[in-house]
Length: 214
Ligand code: SAH
Ligand code: MG
Image (cartoon, rainbow, N blue to C red; front, side):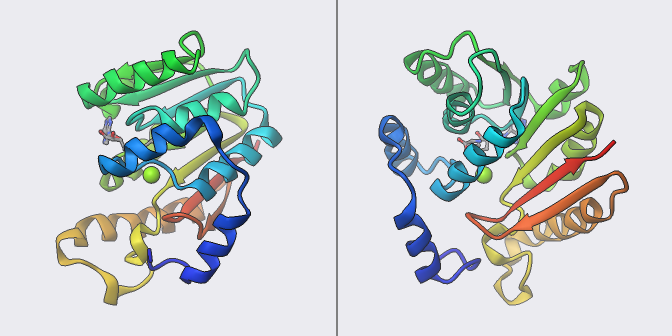
């Protein structure tokens, strides 16, 4: 129960998803250690979007154990480069181990540090950006992402409905009130941006798909 979809819808869609064989150990590790990796239906969504968009340069904000970065590497061309930002040292080490295990050392580069510092130092354009870090700072990270995303590029933001709290005041945990308020403002902001088109998709914990027009 994540307060976004009815359980029977989630279970039904989940039951249709193809098996993700090699990724199972990472999924198990994440569950046992409470690492908030993308949900299977979000992984499937990324897979389809990446096959349509065929990005050559990908940027991720929030690596954790490298699960979503590996999903992105698996579903893009062997020449596609992925840079992913993570501030937690233990996570960086785990991610690097997993990336090596999957043979993606030459394609996925983990940038250790605070996203706010790392983002401003990045140059060149990216075709695909996946934003999955501190939710209270999405606006700041998104503004940097708009500087970095190429025309025709896509920005996907994870967890934008935050356990349903964003859409329903009754669900709001008072300790999360600030994050919820910021996410609501963020969603209004990205839905109004000129030159960009956004769609909010209620799968997983809610994702926002933003396309940069020319
Ligand atoms: N994308 C991953 C999950 C990321 S979980 C996956 O689906 O597999 C979010 C991660 O973002 C955490 O590991 C956290 O340490 C990192 N993070 C949160 N805020 C950050 C920030 N400001 N700078 C860098 N990393 C951040
Ligand atoms: Mg997430």
